[in-house]
Image (tube, rainbow, N blue to C red; front, top):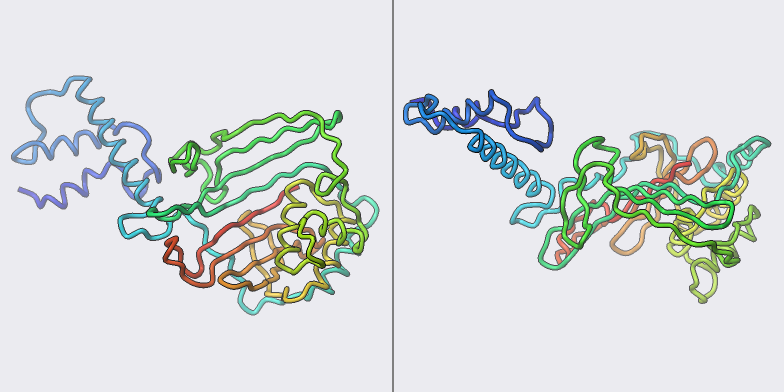
Length: 329
C-alpha cells in the first residue's frame, strides 16, 4: 500500500498552485483522489456515491479548509499574533532622509495655482489590531469613505478590504466575533442629516501655520497648553479623518510639523498602497509613531504605530503594528 502521507499529499484539495482560500466543493479530480483513501487497497470504492454524498464531501472539505484558514489568521493555541498582520514599514537602506524644514519648502512650492484644493470628507484605508483577554490579537483591515453633500448632510461607507490581498476573504470583528467575510463586504452604510458645526474638526481648517496650530489645539481638546508631539499627531489623524487637505493646507501642516520636537527624518519608504514616501519617526514609551509624507507635495500619506517592546498581557511583540492609516485623495 502506498505511503499514507504520499496519498494525502496527492489528494490535497488546495494545492500550492491553487487559490489561497478554498470556498467551494472539491473538483472531480480532488474527489477521486480523496475517495481513493477510503478503499482498503488504495483504489476507489466499488459502491458509487450519491449526489448527496458528493455534496457532503464538498461541505466537509470546505469546512476543513475554512477552519485551517481561520486558525492561521487568528493564531493557533500558542496565541501568536495574527499572521495577517502587516509588517512594519521598512525604511529603504541608504536612502536620503529629507529634513522636515526642507519638506516644508517643497510643500510650499507645490502649493501653486492649480494645485489640489481642500475637500470636506475623507477616504482612508486602515489596519487596526484587535485585542482581548485570553485570545490572540487579530488585525482588522477596512476602508472608509466619507462624502459630504451640498445640503451639509454626509454619508459614510465602511467595507472590509485589504489591498495587500485583493479578492481574498478579509477578517472582521463584525458582531464582536472575528470572522472571515468576502473582500468588499459592507460593514456599515450610514447617512447623516445636515450639520453646521463651526468647531474643529468640522470647521474648515486654515492654511496658515499659526492658525492651523490653534485649530489642532482645539481639535485635541486637551486644555493643558501647547500640544505635545504625540498629541499633535493624534490631532492630525483626527483632522485627516474629516478633511482631504489641499496643497495650501498640507504646506501649513508640514511647516507646523517641522517645529515639533522629537519628530526625526527616517528615510524613504513605500507605503502599504505602493506609494513612495518620506518617513518621520517619533518614539513614545513602548511604541513608535511613523508619519509618511508625499516626497513631492508634503501631503500626509499615512501614519503608523508599532510596538517597540513585548506586552504579554495582550500577546503582542515588539514590531507588531498596532494601527496604520493610509489616506487617499
